[in-house]
Image (cartoon, rainbow, N blue to C red; front, top):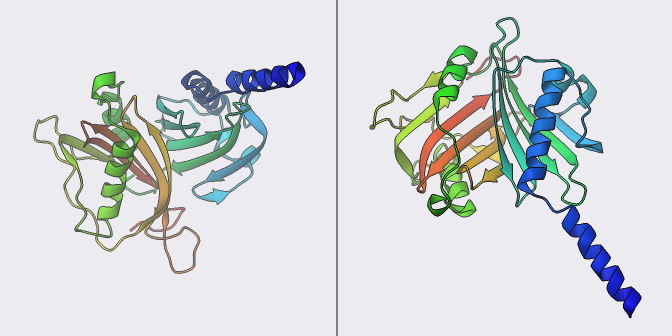
Length: 269
């Protein structure tokens, strides 16, 4: 009996020591950003085996964007303790090889090691790409922590992001538009710094945003959705684009929207 109790206690202690925490996830995003800056496809918190995609396609991590040393001019990360996942936005303004990248990770809550990385990578030629505008506006916005008493639930944050995405295929969708709200799409910005700024400036019709993957951070009121814009990427006749839509939600309403879509070397819509 005593040995059984000790075994249970030991198992619980081991579980507690590897519980997914904000601090563990912050270490992951620090590792990821550091690896990207150094051009290293291996880093401390990376698992021995990792599922790795860029623009919705499986690639060799050793040959991917992480193998390129990039001078990062701006970055911001969010951390989803419930899913043990992270999101990072990375802006590189190098005129020769500019990038705007979003990267999400999935982390084992038993080892605190990254088991999956999914990135959307945009550069010259991609949808509305303008790294100067992206950097300028992104660095001016306030995506700071929201006071505890004013935070929305995960369900409210996710629903706001989904409503915006659903609107593309269903014009009857009720979107919780906030005022002010500013949308950064590529380098195009809808905000003017006015109290009347709106994100309700129109979206295409009859477009399905599918295969959605979420990272939600209640502390910052954010949800990032990596998805296929306009149909499943790689499916014949679908014409989908690798896409990320990130939302900041305040008081149940949309405050900021960041979007980027990779055209994969093809003509954009």
